[in-house]
Amino acid sequence: MQIASSTTSEIEYRVVLVLDEGSNALCFVRGDVRRLPRISMPRDVRYVGYIQQHFHDVYGLEVFVVEIFPEVGLRRGYVVAEILNPVCDCVLESISLTEFSDDELNLNERSTLESIVNGRTQGWGLLSRIEWRLEMQDWVARSTGREVTAATLRQHNAGGGFALIQFTAKSGERFWLKATGWPNMAEFEITRILTAIRPDLLPACIAMRKEWNAWLMEDAGHPMSSQTLHLLPQAISSMATIQQSSMDHTAELLAAGALDQRIETLYPQIDDVFEYLAEIMALQTATHVPILDVGTLHELQSAVSHACTQLMALRISDTVVHNDINLGNILVREDRCSFSDWSEAGVSNPFLVLPYFELLLPNDSPVMKRNLRSSYSQAWSGLLSQSQITEALQLAPLLNIFAHLYGRGDWLTTSQRKSQHFQRYARSLTRRMHRETHDLQLARCAFS
Image 1 (cartoon, rainbow, N blue to C red):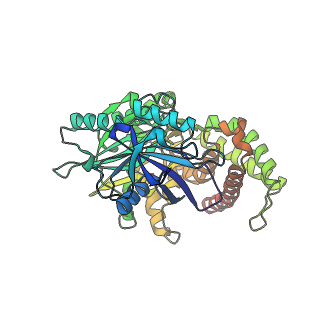
Image 2: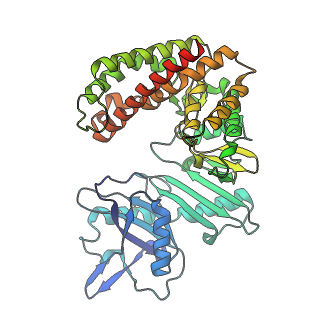
Image 3: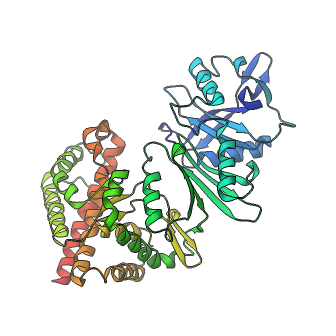
C-alpha cells in the first residue's frame, strides 16, 4: 500500500490492536486517558514485517496486519492489526473501541474500523476484514491439503488489497499466497496467462481466487543473490523461452492489462514526450547534473525516432517483457530459474528486456556482460538471423529507457506530469538516454 510522502526519514502510525473478534482494542490507560500505541518506522523498510517484529519484541504479541491507512493532512496514519496470541502479561489494556476519544479515533476512523470488524469493506477491498485471515487459512489448507494455522504464516505485504504471505507446512513445504490491489490488479490475469504458457518457468500455481485477486503458489526457491549471480545467463535464456512462448498470446496479455510498449505504439508518442522533456529540462534548478539544451534534446529525439524505425524494420515479433527485473524477482532452486512479480509486464520487442538484466551486473564485469548477451543471442538464434540479433542488441538499451519512461503513457495527460518527483525522474532518464546515444554511435562505428 502506498504511504503518504514526507520529508522526514521516519513515519509514525497509531496502531489499533483488535481482539475479541474486533470489539475491543489494546491501549495505554492512564486515568481517564486511553491512548493507542504508536510505532515509528523508517520509510525504506517493509512495514508489515517491521510492525510484527516490533510488537513481538516489545509486547510479546503476535499480530496479523489487516490494513494500513496513510496520514491525511496533519493527522497521522493508523494500522489495524489482529492479535493472534492470548494477551498475558502486557502493559496494554483491553477496552471497547467506543471508549476512545475523538483525538485518538475520530468519527470517520471509528466508522472504518466498524466496517473492518463487520466485513463491510467494499471501499478498500475484501482482504481488509478481520474474518479474512481465517477464510484465507481455510482456502490454503483445502487447496494444498496441508494444515495451516496462524503460527505457520509470515506476512510480507498487506493493505490496499495487497497480500504476500508465506506458509510453512509441518512437513517443511513452503507455499506463497499473493494478492494485488490497484494499480496492480492486472498481475492476477497476466500471471494466469503466463503460468498456463510456461508453468515450468513461473512458480507453480496451485489455485487462484478471482474475488480476492489472489493466487496460491508452490515455493520456487530463493531470490537470486550475489552468490548465485553466475546463473544470470541461464536466467536470461529462460526469459527468452517465456518470451518466445508468449508470441501467440500478446493480444491476450494486452487485454489483461499488460503495458502496451510495442514500438509502433511508442513511435507516435515521441513528439509529445520530448515536448514535455524540453519543458521540464528548462525548469531544472540543480547544478550538479547537466541540463540538456533544446538542440541536444532535438538530436536525442531524432535518435530515438531513428532507433524505433530501425527496430520496426527488423520485423521481430512482439513478446511479453518483464519490466521489473531485479534479483528478488528471479527465483533460484538448484540450477533452475523462474520469474515472479509480473505487475509491470508489457508487450514489446523482446530485446528491450536485456538492459534490465545488464543492470544487475557489477560495473566492472565486461566478461559477465558478454556472457549474458551471448546466452540471450543464442536463445534467439533459431528464430532470428545474426544480423537481426546484432541490430536489436545495439538498439535495445536506448529504447528500453524510452519505453520505461513512457510506461503506460497516462502521465502525459494527468497531474503526474506536474509532480516534481516525476520531473526529476524523467530528467534523469533523459540524461541516461543521452549517454546511450553516444554508446550506440560507438557501437555503430565498431561494426561499420
